[in-house]
Image (cartoon, rainbow, N blue to C red):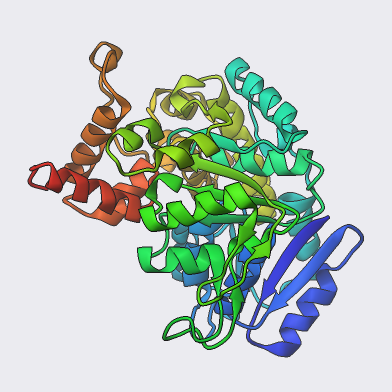
Length: 432
């Protein structure tokens, strides 16, 4: 069952969109503002969000940013009563998949559903012909038939959430919620409340009781992204949940039984974090039942043109225009790029190129790829990933004049994760 979320503060238009999108096999939910939309997103697995741009409180652009942090595989379309080029550019920069002017014709809505929701995707949504990646997906498919906890490791942007969603879809829990939580995308003080929920009055702003993401995933799958960034106190409580299969909300004296499958992901070496006493060893062994290591995009060169064509077709269909061709020079430029942000960076690059290409051909200039100097393979041999990551972070920061947000985007890393790395470097005596 495919789920779509409509977000608009105008009741009549919101209800009209809901009715226009309803059809067999599609469940359409509605939210009156961005905050309500985020609450619904954390409880359910939405394939598509259609949101108004201008709303009180959390507006459309802020909602796009939140979705990209918490549910990067979800497609987002922004709507506006006045379609302007600057607004459309801003929406795309924040990660929106499309920008449409109100009122949206029913035929256009139908095309959106076909292009972004209904179209089947191979291997649970992962597009690949790489032998190592296909072998990994086969292991994931076998694991889906079990209740084993999975640990997905790989650089940012390699598709860890897509693999987690595929495991959920292949499992007996596919009918129940898939809930994702990015442990690096929220302040440390809120992690426990998000995980375990809270009772009314548990803390200053707890005006009503609220279940955490573990309870929200009841019967289904909870995906904990960037689990290496989880604070140690929350790690201890999560370990208890994994052991006892019970959760206790903040401010509560009673526990609730939960039936949830856990999938964790990290772009760091948890073993190294255990040695540094920043990750609990007992929790690591609870999570490390079956580990899948996702290869970076630079190790899957055959997938680069395949993914590029996939994204070209998808974005062209979303914009209702013929798919542009990829010129030989543009193809060569894509193959030469080291892709530090992996598939996520490639997707954003192709999206930008589809928008810019007006003559039916994507040229290198449309890709607007920044030069990233990759260290020769001989220089990488024998070095730890932490050392390579440190060099990448520092060199990227130097290139962008210390702009942390831009550096995080180029690397394909959450901004909070980048801040955490820089704090670690300063604690080690490095002036950054």
